[in-house]
Image (cartoon, rainbow, N blue to C red):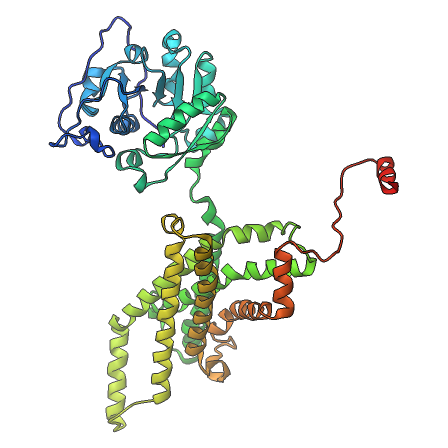
Length: 509
């Protein structure tokens, strides 16, 4: 997210130009009612309101000014061409030349591209002692190429100013629509604690939450935040994609290739819907089991070690951290499976099959076709599937930060752990009901490959059996004591760095 800006500094001999606002969307603040007239236009800001300067007239600068005005600040905007840009800002904001805009405010937002920072060097004397808030972001190529962050570069150009990095992770849309439609957190870093305090108070006044990121050296990390594209979803996404490809190829071989090779039947029409619908529940089921498998492995590791004070292996730690994303991908695949299943009866293939079955009944003189076992199996199968999807929906909803923040730890743990395990059990029963006796019939082993559902049962059954074992008093009680701080060894030994002589001396004491 790069913020548009001005590229040059106007001459100081120009007189300030106060903007006259034309009607438009940017004329209406979206946060503070006390600044809104009955006709919807901005009222004048009281003269005692804190004054803030903004250098730049791009999209982000306009949204920032709207937010500042709506939060009760008196804003003066510095632009290369005030007459042309005045109509883009709220009427309560004063739009003037850059040289005039930096005189009175103590806090000035620099909403400009990095390459335009040097154009402000002519204002060095006027900017001395002021707080400059850098809101810019580099592109991904610029971030990799430049070793110095934009904020640090700005600080090197204006050594007499205090530079604060802030607002670079907030989009122009979020500034206009409010923190309810975006991330509330605003990372802030600076070398001066007092400057961070001033900017933090402004962040809170605008309805956001300041997050102290330390010194200005952290600005490079802060500027990298908007460049990351779903960093926590890369591994879970690749995992889900890999499972989908595996099960899709497996089902393709069983349901399409085998009939074509053995019987000469062309069933390639199954590729868009039928094979996909057979693959999706496999992926959803395995992903759901992978949410609870790392917890089982962690518990087993703690039982083996007899302590909770040793770190888990890195691969297990990363796996535990990605459980939320894996669970949401499981819900996504399960929801798609439900939609595909709902659409199956609407397909042309299903209509042909129904007609062909009816013709076979007529030709064989069967007036009534009813298999009690199949009816009960399908009814139970559908009921368990609906219940499992409902549980997954509850898990997905409570994973949202807005919902999770309204729950205490016990409620959140009960839903995510207990009800999540119930969802896994329901999914297992759903799969077993679907399979019924197919795992024991030779005709379902095509190309000597077992039915797909038998493969998906492996990991979930391990998780369920392990959970059942942990309920036994001999294991469950021991695990509970370990998690409360008990250790296998009676005496806890701490290894401290010391030389050999000191160690021997200490041992004799």
